[in-house]
Length: 118
Image (cartoon, rainbow, N blue to C red; front, side, top):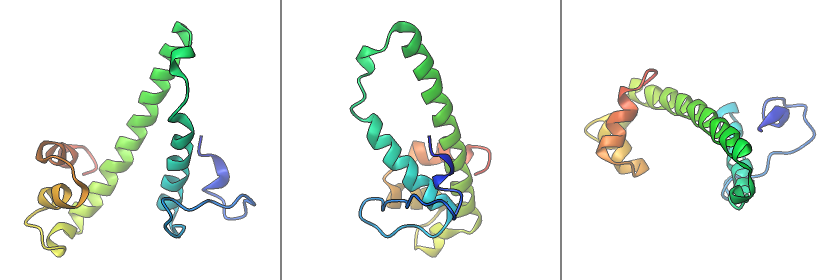
């Protein structure tokens, strides 16, 4: 899905910008940019055309990808919490920072903070 285009610096395929922003200089940002662009390709994918076996297989694959993204989000939230970035930004807590800055519900923010890695 993402492939080596985001990991190796010697790859000849440039990573396009994400949402018109400059290309990220870090590996995490480059991977997220590539994932975002790959997901754009799936937006109009005709899931209705999948037979039952493929539909079941694709759902399993999508859930596995989601689990990997959840793990990355948990690590990022854990790092934000560990650095106390919420308070540095004027929020009363990391939870309040997540709600105000990333438009997640209070329950979703609490859930993110309760995951391993957070």
